[in-house]
Length: 498
Image (tube, rainbow, N blue to C red):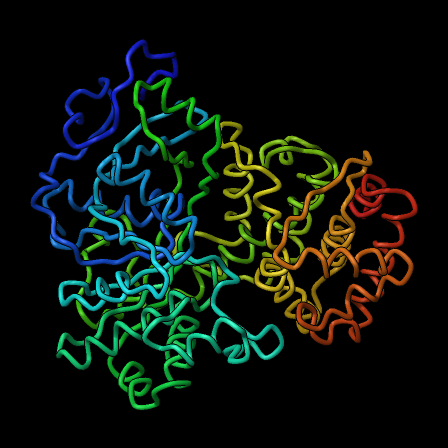
C-alpha cells in the first residue's frame, strides 16, 4: 500500500524515470525496449488500461507474452489528444487501486505505441495489416456497433456505414479500417487476425463478427466471405469499475509523487472471461487470472443483467435526487433498497449460476463493490447513454420476466425514472445537462409522457412491443404518474413498502 500524503517531489512518468519513482510504486520488471507488438487496441480509454492492458502487463512481469505488446489506436479527433499525452510519457500508465483498506499504485508498461489519428485511417490500416499483429481488440462503447435498434441486425442504412461502403480504402469507422486492413492482409498473404470486442455487449464477439462481415459485404462480397471463414471473433465478458479521470484523480497521482497526465483509478475487483477462439494465437491470460472457457454466456449474462443493469437501476434515481456518486446512491437508504429489491426479486431469478457464484451471492458482491466510497464513479457517467444501456441491460430482463411470470414492477419503475430523468430537471429543480447522444428526442418524448405516459413506451427502437404488454405498461404508467404527482421519493416509498 502507498500513503496518500502529498509528496514533496514528483517524478515525471517515463521509461528513464521508472527507477526514480517513490518506494511502494510497482513498476515493470521487464525491459520494455525488448517488447514487440502483437495487439492493436482501438478505443484506448481508462477501462482498457485498467483491465486488458493490466492482464497483459502481469504476464510480462513473469517473463511471458513479450511479443504481444499493445499498439493503441482511435478514430476520433479526441483520440489524438490522448495519443499525445501518452506518447509524452512513453505510453506508460499509473493505475491506482482504491479499496476501503487503502490504495496501491502500479505502473503498467504493456502498451508501446499509439497510431497517429488521421482522416481516412491510413496509419491504422497499415498497422493492423502488419503481419506481427494477430489480435485487434476494441472498446468502443455498447452503442458503437451499428446495430439496428429494432431488428438487432446490422444497421446497413447508417450514414457512417454508407460512407465506408462507398469509400472502403479511406473509411471513417474502426470497423471500416478493420475491413481495409484485412483486405491488405489477404492480398499480401499475412493471413487473418482475431477481432476481440471488450465491450459490455452480450455476445460481443458475435456482434463484432456481424458488424465487420456485414460492412465488408457492402463493398466486397468475396472479402466478406474470406473474413467470415478465416477470422475469429471470441465472445468475452469484462468487469472492473473504472471511473473517468478528473481533477481529483490527477491530484491523487501527484500526491503519490508521480507526474502522470492520464492516470487511472479502479476498484480492486477484476474479472475477464474469454472464449478460447483465436485464429492467430493469443497470450496465456489464464496464467494471470482470466477465465478461459467455452461458456462465456452465463458469466456475461450475470454481469450484464445484475451489475450493468444495477447501474441503470440506481443512476437515474441518483441523478434525480442529486446524489453525486454511485457510492452516495448506495449510502441512500431508499436507493440501495430499490437496488436490492429489484436485483433480488426481478433480475437474479432470471440469471443462471456460474461456477462458485450464485446470482444472489453476486447481488451481495455488487452491493459491496458499488458501496466503495473510494471509487468516485459519478451518477452522471453511469447514467450516460441510457438509449443504449437500457435496451442492453434493462429491457431484455423485462421481456424475460414477462415470459417467465416473474415480477416486473420494479423494472417498470426504473423505466419510469429514466423517463423522468430525460425530462431534464432534478427533483430540486436544477437542470440536467444533455446526457445521451439522442437527448433531444428523449427530452421531447419525456415531456410528452408527462401527459401521456405511454408515449415513452411508443419509442419502438428501445421498447419494441412492450407498450402492448399490459402487465408492464400499466405498471409503467402508474409509476410515472405517481412520480409526476408526488415525486420520486414517494414512488420509492410505495415500491419498497411492497
